[in-house]
Length: 196
Length: 196
Image (cartoon, rainbow over all chains, first blue to last red; front, side):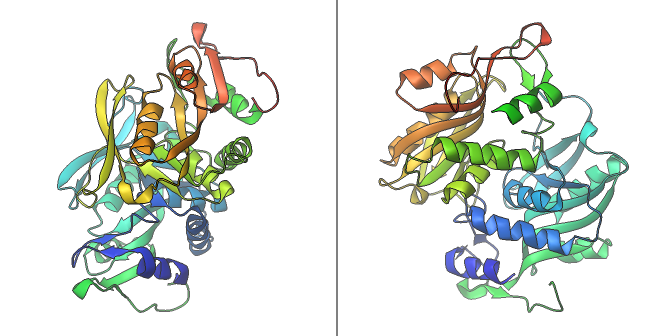
C-alpha cells in the first residue's frame, strides 16, 4: 500500500534493526484519514471472504480494525489484555507473550460476541513474531468459529511471524511488508502480484 | 443523542445502580456505524472551538475519538496507561484512579505530540467521577496547551464527575446523560435546549 509506505518513510523512526516506531500516525498519535484508507484496503483484500466479525487486540489494533469493519459492514471486537471488573464471566482466553514488552498477557473475549457461525477477520497493527495473531486465532477456535484471514498493517518480514502464520494455513494480508531496518533504513519487501 | 439512547436501551445491561454495561457496542464489541454518528455529533458540538487535536485514553476512548477527529480533520492521540519499551522518553504523565478497577494508573502522552499552540478536545467513553478527564486535562496543561472542551459518550450524571468538570470551567458535552440506573432501569436526564 503506497500511501502507508510513504507514511512509514516520512514519519516512522527506526530505533534499531528490529524496532520501527510509528507513534506519529498509528499507535500513539493516529492519522484518521490514513486509517480510512487502511480500512478500505483491508475491506478490498477480504471482500470475498464473507467476513462477519473483525477481531483485534487493544489498543493499537482498534483504529485500523474499526475502519475495516465499517467498510465491511460488520462489528469489531477488541480483545482485552486482562480482566476488568465489569467483564468477568464467560470469557474465551489465550496467553500471549509480547517480545516488545517482555511479558505474558492474558487476552480475552466475551464468549457471547463470537458464535460458531462467525467468519472472523483478525486485524493487528504489527506482525513480528505472530504471537498476538495466534492468540486471537485460538480464541476464534475456542468459540467454534472460523478465522477467515489475518490483516496486518505493518509486517516485519525479517521476523518469523508471517511465515509461522502462513505455514499454519492462514490467509495473511499485510499492507506494508518490511524486509529490513538495517542501517537505520526502512527497506520494503518487493510487492508481488496484485493486491500484495 | 437519540440513536445512542436507543442503543443503550436496547443493548445496554444494567448490572447495578452504578454500573451500565455497554460492551455490545462501545467498549468491547464496537458498532462502527454508531461510532460514525457519535463522531459526527462530537464534531458538530465542537465545530466552533478551533480544535487542533483530539486526546483520549486507551482503549475504549479510541473508536469514538477517531471518528470525531476524522470529522474535525485533526489527529487523535491516545494516552497510554503505562510505559511501553518503545515509548519511554519525554512523557507528559498524570495519575488516574479508576473506581471501576480500583487501581491507580499512570497515564502518559509523548511530549512531541502536544504543543503550546494546541487546542485540545478530550474525549472519553464514560464520565463517572471525572478522574480520567481531569488527568488528560492536566497533561494538556503540562504541555502548555489549552483544553477546548470535553466530549463524553455516556455520562453517569448521578455521579459527581460532570459537576466537577463543569465547576472547573470545562465545556462538557455528553451525548447521553444518565440520571439513574435504579431498579435496573436506565433513565436519561431530560435533554435541555438544542444539541443537548
